[in-house]
Image (cartoon, rainbow, N blue to C red):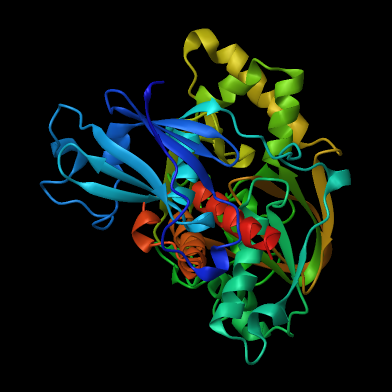
Length: 462
């Protein structure tokens, strides 16, 4: 591509960054100024000049009635000059436009966004990762001490580090995150608080991690749901299989009858014993693709009706939704969540011509979920507290082993989870000199990747 190539290794930068290799190696614009090519240390990408102009955050992340993207002239802007400045990971791509504006794009921000919007002229080397998901013989559930979250003298910075470590284990879909952790070294429970659904250990831990929990439309805020074989909680078993401890509860995702299911769930064993199950949806889908490739698309495209009626709140509470078993990230073929509850599914809402194939696909997925290779079975006993990603893991109950048995459940909505995870990443990145304005709009996977690059940069270079 003809154009101007500029490489400027000098510029203002922290002295500690002087000895580190340049993050951005070169940059050039095409002859017409409607494209910019940037060579990073690991890959080369070409960007639309208009996208760069639209994505500018020099004046903050928010737009007004004049600067809003959809209010801009139809004619594209063009780049006049482009060059890099600074050193190491603090480098910037400095661009001047034909409309008189000037911008300084953080090279780190640009590299992370490149995988979404840039054209890879020289593909980056892929980091080796294991196949997503886990099988029973490969899973080792991480254990986190309660004291790491609640010890006396814990600073906010220390708490944030511990919290991010736990959330990575829960939410990171790469090999480092299995989607489930166990909280150990818990104090003795207050039996009255636990049975009364208030001020219990499960809620305390989840609020410590996420600052907030689910607000039920009738129960209100901070109250748990208790699955018990005795007391008033046992009355909920009427017509609701989740609460009927005599039944096998098939692997499922919770809040399946909500339009927006909860993202994270915690379950604490107060008394008794049961055999509980967890399944990695990633691993089950991988097996499905291998054994029945055509089935996967039916899970992505066939709507199901989920619903239940709860009669234990006074007036009946009717809740239902329609969704597909698999939801993808917007505009991509990347998995977002599994939506699955055999006990509360009404029917498949498949078109007549594809109904048989869709039904077989869903039955095949269910058969895989129940395999001993995929379905982890654990004895759930007093003092156990497991927290897991409800988008990636299904859970169930095979049988109650010892009565009376009471489990205390609490959940966290998707928005609360994302807000907390985003807050932790942004605060850490700001400590490394990244301006907040460039981070506000970033998708969480890109924030996670940016933090990985920052940590890798400073670790490799001392």
